[in-house]
Length: 441
Ligand code: NDP
Ligand code: HSE
Image (tube, rainbow, N blue to C red; front, side, top):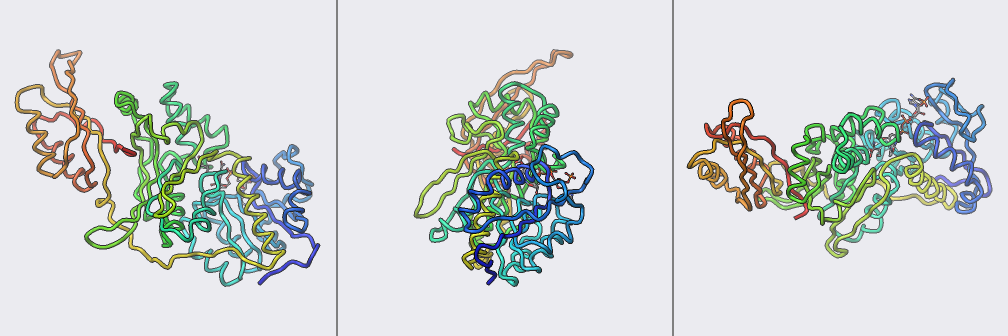
């Protein structure tokens, strides 16, 4: 057990001084006295690793001599290492080296944890140090510690949420102002919400990494980013947004983690995809870069966590919270919980998960077409809730077609995929225009 000498400063190394790191550095300096009082020992910032040493950082109240490009040496000289560099390498090697040297680690790096968390957990266990990562999921929102600690006596069945600020910002602006996709992604980048490569946000990789962490902690099992079914928001069209409006819904990128029982046994299914949700649903009112996470547990019932999901200061709040926790452990001699993966649940096939669907089809406008379409739904055991039809006239040929919007009751992904394939093969179906999941109802 690693314990600091009473009164001796706890040495902190900061890796990264970008959007999050610069807020962390500022708060470390400006709140030094409060942090020392809360921890029971002062913190000493021993270095800040960056990539570009020549960059102007005069707005950051840190001694310029502390900036270094030699992160590898810096991590060997600290009691606690804060990693806000991002990406897999060199972050992984730096953290493993820090842990091997007896340092506790605080990181916001969901990509690394979802890729190789067990290696880091094992190293932290072997060294008897802490590995904390509250900032890795949903920015400022305290969600991991409540799941890992407060709900440790309950049984979590489902975690559902909006966990990516960039995509929520983009979808919200597209919905409310009609702004274009590229323009809103650029705004999210300028505001510091997006990842270094915003593809990670818009293609759903960031949300998938967060979903993997949430599912691992909630269900006491191992889920990696590769186990998560993922669709991003790049295929969400103006027509999808309009269709959602007609249904009095909004489109959100959702992360859904479920522990369920299928005929093959109990397992976990984790998915990230855009979905329509009713405007009356609490998630519909999550605007801008805010995040929200619902947790459904056997005894606790439904819990909802809401707050800023991205940005320098909100994320730094979560980083500093972890820093205080692990620093207190250094003072008192304790250690926080390590990995809990005893449940060892299998990852269920995505085809077994179920939800409702909104399907838009352009079809021939003649007798028997609706019946043929309905037959394909019935043949694949997908029950129809509502059907709406309106006539379309081709502006060039004057030819008439019908657009059918079918909303289903709950069906499995496998059944829905087979239905859509069959519909696309009908002579009378000109095009399956869109298929979108409908959640929260
Ligand atoms: P930035 O790109 O803004 O900052 C990255 C920092 O790391 C920069 O200071 C950069 O140096 C430094 N850096 C890059 N490569 C190296 C290297 N090889 N050695 C040393 N330093 C290096 O990223 P963010 O602050 O936005 O994100 C950091 C982490 O926090 C990521 O894991 C991200 O996923 C996570 N996160 C981000 C949130 C956000 O809202 N932005 C929210 C929650 C988590 P330089 O300044 O010289 O370029
Ligand atoms: N790029 C991430 C987001 C940062 O937009 O949510 C917060 O993890």
